[in-house]
Length: 272
Image 1 (tube, rainbow, N blue to C red):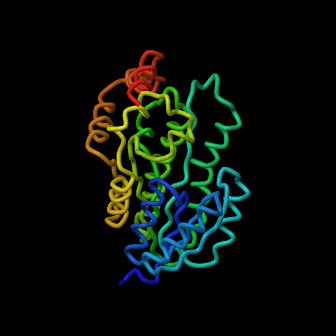
Image 2: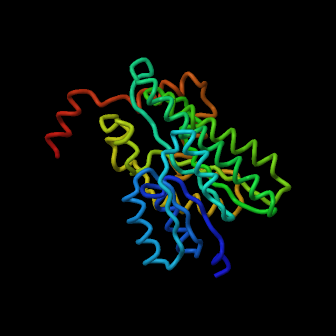
Image 3: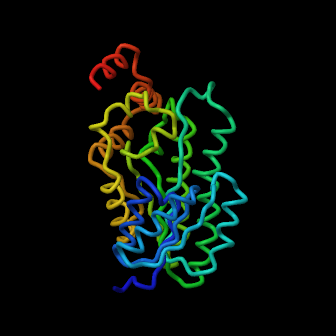
C-alpha cells in the first residue's frame, strides 16, 4: 500500500494502451487523473476504476491536439503528480501528397507539442519534490521511416529523441523518463487513422495485446529504464533495421503498410 497517496496522470486513458496502463496504476493503489476527449467515456471509466480498485479518480475532458487545451490542462491540475503518462496519440494513413494538412498538423500537435507542454510543466513540479516518473508513448515506428504514415512515424522519432535527451538532463534529479515502444497493437488506432485496409491492420494475428504492452511499459517505468521495446518480433525488427540503410527500411515499411490489393480484399470479404 506504499503508493496509496500517489497520483498518476494519464492522457488517452479511456481506450487501448492508455486504458490498460490506468488499470495497472489503479491496481497498484495510485489515485488517477485521466484525460481524454469524450466526457461520457471518461465518466464510465471513472466509475469502473473507483468500483474495482477503490481509488480516487479525477476526470478531465480535453482535446490535446489544441494547444490552448493542453496548456489549460496543466493549469487545472493543482495537486502533485507523481507519474505522468503521455499516452494520447493518433496517426493518419495515406500518401503524404494526398493527406489533409490540417489533420497532419493536429497529429503533430497531439503527438509532439502536447507531450512537450505536459512534460515541461510536470518536470518543473517534480523538480520541486526531487522525484517523479514520466512514461512517454513512443513506438517502434520512431525507429523506422514509415511510408503511408510518414507524419506519424516522424512524430514518434521525435518522442524517442526527446525522451532520451531530457532523461539525460535529469539524471541526477530523482526524475526518470521512460519511452514505451510498442509495435502494431490491437487498439482503435487503425480505425481512427483510416488504415483498416492496410496490410498491417489486416494481419490480426500479428497485433499485440494492449494489456501486455501496458505491462511492459509499467514495469520498465517502475524499474527506471530508459526505454522498452514491447514484443520479441518488434525487438528483432528494430535490431535488423539498425543494420540496414534507411532507404531499405523505408521500402520494407512501404510494402508492409500499403493497402491490400483488390483481389486480397475480395478474398477477405469471402472469408468473413
